[in-house]
Length: 296
Image (cartoon, rainbow, N blue to C red):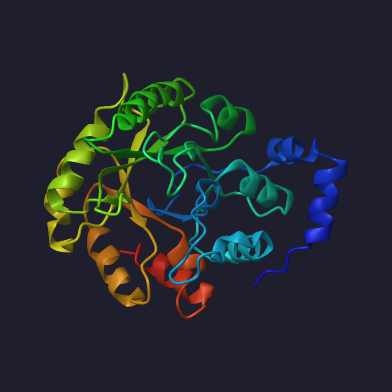
């Protein structure tokens, strides 16, 4: 792992909080999509929603030093374009100098805490559009889970639409991650990854706001990967694949991603826990393999 000097990082935060804004102001930026035309983003916005587990390790992402070292390693690998995270993590990475010439994507709604009764009333407790613009970040991401039986979903849907409008007003891309969600017998919400559900969620997300000019979709691979071509025909908006916690069968996940990445609207991949905490512990190998899937 790339070594991080935790004591120095804490000292800067303690004595010079203005260093965050200064680092943001001098950060070397790049276009959202580079010469390859593809986008490879590492995601680390899970902790702010209280979702700390990976596989069988319930607190894998709770060690911030370990997470930062994994992120710095992933960002150093060729072909990795940037990172998706909440303000605290992005500001640590800014102070560490890890975001130079990287795409920086702020996570916007983290209020739907994992396991909470209000989980689907997913309030925007992270970055606001004006925060992303002020910091010179490159994009935002919002999670849109819709349960037809949960009135809280309507509040999230309405706020998501107004956020799409506000991001467009700043000419900032916003990546919308939509799901149709149902609660099981245990009361836990589960995202429906059937072809029909993903199709409907993409149609809803594509129509949010007064303009879709700056909207991207962040799309899961369906239960049956063979359905992806039909599902992705739902919208002309550019999309990236969502790579979640894939468990021990990493190779099967790679094959699912490989097929979906050949579809015309799919422009890249956003993956987090599967790359930062692979089952075999090899972060470099997991990241490099994911990057290789983006090549023609």
